[in-house]
Length: 271
Image (cartoon, rainbow, N blue to C red; front, side):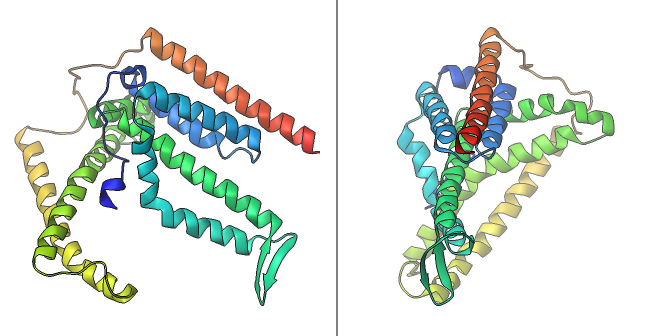
């Protein structure tokens, strides 16, 4: 399960998407997430799926690698769909006692499952094709206008970068702790729910200790290098837009126009 988490990991490559400015990828990811929530119709999701699959194909990241990330939130997707199936009012299709399934609930559950899946896959494309350093620079440069209101943009971007960098490290650490506990006779598979939860305690405690120790080591290393925040700091590789970034922006706005048009036309068609 831990190896199925793909958010926060980087997949090396030399594709066009890998070489795009991180600000373009941030804007594209936000735009994609927003557009999958602007409506509910098959045409809209068909356009979103085509756009996402095209980006995956161009990036060179194996589709199986991205789909593997859905396993980590499979339970969350199923729970969300079940809530929508049983709690959405409408035309009753099946009922037993107080439990009832409605036509509107089934439709809402399908759309919710698609939205969550697309959200994770779209976010994974950004993190898999962008290094943590580039992502930090992109966040800081994209939201630097908030410095006017004294919002700590650099510090927030740095924290997000460190959090993303720690995800694969903590997963590897968890895997090592689980293997060590198994070698001592621990059993994480058999038994009921309470027994499995109890078996996780010997993993959580050393994992927290390891995470705190790594955080102290990182803080000491940053202080030893005289890190004092983003004020007055320069970049070894400053971000500059290139021709491919302008083309990418045009494609993103065309995609946005198609999504809005599909929403408007579908509403008129169904009216």
